[in-house]
Image 1 (cartoon, helix red, strand yellow):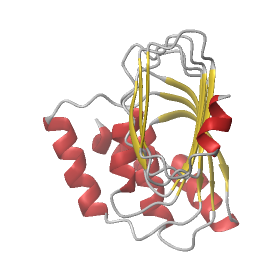
Image 2 (cartoon, one colour):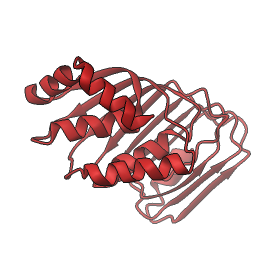
Image 3 (tube, one colour):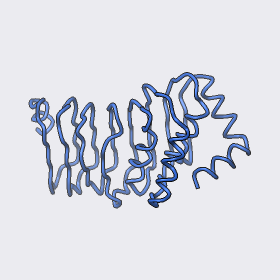
Length: 206
């Protein structure tokens, strides 16, 4: 009923759900003007958002699966007690400040057991800007993201080294699964098995 209602209102601008018991699944798609605000939904376990730009706050302590497909990092606020997340799929178009926003987004939850990133494009990454944002994050005592399994699908040319630095800095995965071209995979293997790189990386993120 809810999905049907939203599908018939493509120009809806504000959608607020508060303390709705019994609601376990929401799918929202192709609502470019919507401002989405979800509060106090303890029963919600599955949330899928596709092509919706005005995303707001999500307070769903028992959320298990989150899927997001859009052209920027969602402005979602997952409360710290939202620690049940098991599966998350983010399909994104990256830009220059993308990784900084990704790190901030992932830091909103206590931990992520599995995150899937499908990057459809990747602009030039500025390493200096990345280090500057890292220093600001440390000054603000932002928590490090905790991702158990990170699945990444990307096909970019060039700047493999910088992309690797940015990805590990923003996600800090315990396990990494990569689907990409041969040069990108080779860069990952060479650097992750290089003790000098590992030492330099940890000096950067700690």
